[in-house]
Length: 122
Length: 110
Image (cartoon, rainbow over all chains, first blue to last red):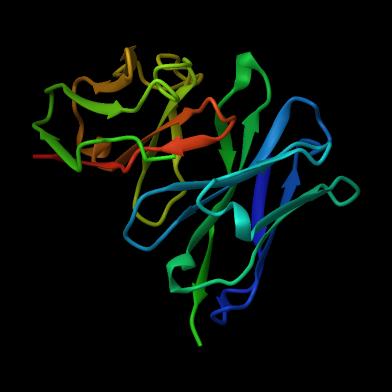
């Protein structure tokens, strides 16, 4: 069974860097079948796609966040990670990691983590 | 990229049908059939309901259906049930190889 689990600090100070990791089980992140996404949801608001990465390291970022974002993948640990720099209160959100297909026949986000709340506050 | 446009809320009585629209542009919804719909309950992760505009994941009720015309995709729920009351989001692949969500629609079952 495919499972994804987000982990990282629940509180980050303004202007600092938010770092999250998603640990995947049941499928290898090195599989050429999938990309690995981050999606966030501010409290009481809608979903926002953040970024995704392929096992080769190829990344795609939301244009509105691109200058502050870095994603990476660690195939030895079956994990992928997100770094968001210079955070503000507007970055406070539940952050979800998810699997998305890499081909025409599976190009959708099917499995999601439970989400982790990150609050930006001093 | 701008968020796809969804109505903020829709409502219907049990047994009725409702449709939620998701309007994008020729750079996203209009370019691909990679539109998905998600159902989300408060405090829970989104659940995939429709993918590739109109396909249902295995085991999902056929009360949920999807379609697309031009730059607008739609989710229809027939035979409304109390359990359908939730937030619904569309998402589309874009010509920039990124993804964009709709703003979300709150469904109320009267």
